[in-house]
Picture (tube, rainbow, N blue to C red):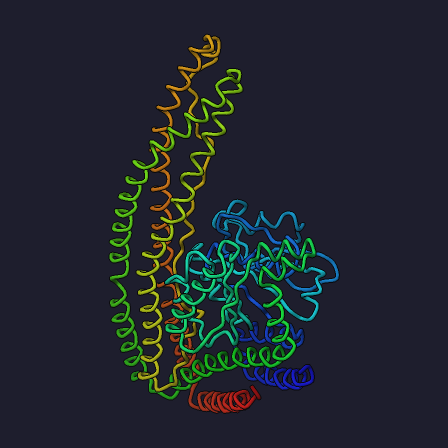
Length: 578
């Protein structure tokens, strides 16, 4: 298999060199060609761990490596791609917007990739690269930890979509609870055929018995096969047990975790299929690039050969068509805002029920703890009750908020998924419109142009016990102090329960509003970008046509020669052994 890849690598390297020569004047393509050349030379397979927030992607990578290397958290990660590749020694660097790089220590990764350390990616991090001396990576495997799809944030999901062109193998994580979501199905339909190979993992099986694992696996499989078409395998897995088993070197835990079985499947795949899949992935990237370049050249040729007056008429017709398409997208904002109102009405109802249910339970728990500890000294009792109270507030909200988040996320994703699809359809129609008006072949819209939801909705707890008095209260007799403390505790418990319900509500609303604003901005930007790429090509052609017939004829001849060469390279790539 290695010899086969060497042959394919030589073939691909020659095609890249040819494309660099043909497209040398179009700098926009050279960066991607440079990346693909590096990929050919490295022979490394990009294996991305994909899935929704809280599916355990980072824990899964740690389990494969066998060390608690990457930071895991119950809160969402920011929009950061983390790339883990082999190195003789551990080195970490952060790459920022503008390609500025900064070396950091492994212990400082959380400062850049967690929501706590880098809220909403305010530091402008593009990705974090880690060189690590792991036997698992030494064979040319690059592990990529991706932001949660359709969950953590809109800009996170975009980062993952934009990275799809660099992914050779996907490992898609589901979890035992909840089952596959609408956003996950949407993502899988978008990437179907774009990532050459996808493995499916059912993580967190340590929470279920064998019967439940089988039921959840079958349920997920039936839904995904119906939506995606074709059969799939789902591998039960517990990242928690796998990592523990590797650290403690316990065969029993490794077997129970599902790591032994999946490792066998993955290693067999790497041994037999790595070269073929890598070559196929690079080939597909080159074909996409050729399609975009060919469309740009054909638009330039059409602009040169069309009389200026007719070209202006066509351009005006194109712009009018674009405006009609944009008008069809105009209802996105009011509809999404209306849906947010409905979602928040449902949240309000749920919060009201939650509060009524939790008030007596909270008071009961606090009284029980108070009675258990009332023999303590005044200050000790105060400290004990404050700490317990803060913990109790967090505990009662955590479980409820997680379930409520699923409802909010599912409803919001449903509406934005509709407009995501419509946005891609609009872009497709714009390209088809340019094809009809300017008589060129349109390139297809790729999955990486898709949109989805930001929903990094989580509740931050604080120590919120309101002290009932000043220092003078501590000189009261013990029985009077305790009576006053309990009275104040009951009052503040209900007030703070209500206050935190308000905080949770505000958190949901703020994030929904921010997500919708970013989403709508991205819809406009994506359409604008498509229109700009088309009009720029047309303007380039117009500029050439004004140089005179001789220069125009020379440029047309050059364009046709480049198109012919691109077509030849495309045919050669399509003939690559799969």
